[in-house]
Length: 434
Image 1 (tube, rainbow, N blue to C red):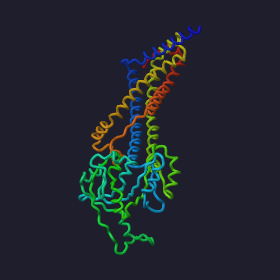
Image 2: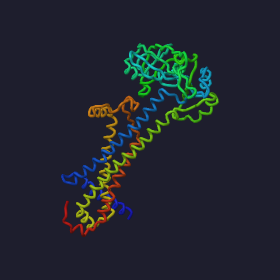
Image 3: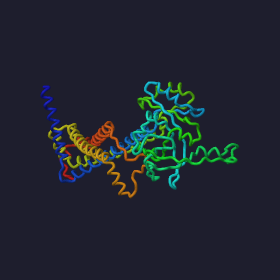
């Protein structure tokens, strides 16, 4: 009896799949055109959703990679004054298993090259220590990482915008020395008597770097610590910040306490805290884009519902015949659900393949959009990246594929119920055809 039941069940499933495949098979009629159009909607929706989510994920990944190239995992700044002897602190931090430290001094400067003047950020480093904390040396594309007195490294976009190359001369004026000539006491702004102005310093470009983040490649000048101290009118060996690298950029919590013991009255912040607003914004935008674009797939899925409802009305006489011959309402429902599943599988698969191809060839798509717009479709100064990011995560792909397929099947429920519970007697008497 059990074997007979299983054989009967299998034959019922074969009947439902056969009828569904017969109805899905393209024919040169109105319903086939509607079916084709209903497939296009979810396919486009899935492709757009995959493309946007991949770009947002890639943006988050590339921004983090670029930040970790120039920023350490921890930064520490003293509440009281600058660090006068950072080497001792560096040795103490390096004594903690897995940690590496360096020291810098930074501040705003005016850069002059030829007749161009622009505000920039100057960072003074200790090259032999900095190499343990950041990846600046590995991103030198021209010239040398070695920094002697009055030598600097600049980003490739700064070099391009100012017409500079290895060996070029630039003039730097520290803004920190200018503020000493202004008196802000008493609620008024006054110039002090007999103000003094330091002459600008001439520096030589010995290397050009590129980390892929516009902010760093266009706005950072790197010198050694002593050269920066001279520019900021500080004693040699003075640092404003201790930088620390850990073995894992995402496992940082257990380092706060030992670092506080070593560095004393200092503000210790992780790279995640320093960039919390940026990462929070990117995450929120990704979630919002996913939520909004999923409605595109939902709307497209309702096209399938409308198509199958039209199909159910047109085929109501055939449905009536099947029910008169013994087909149960559940079987009729399954036929329409299999049709919805088939349409959803085909359209979602096509959309997934199309989305992956768009992400893989995003640079060519960008060039096409730029040509059509007549303007840069991805300005680096706005998005902070040199090229369009794109990173497909398998879990995102699975969620989009399964979610879209589920919506397509759900869209077939109403037409399935309509067909399953229609009156076979009335359906057989009806002569109306679409």
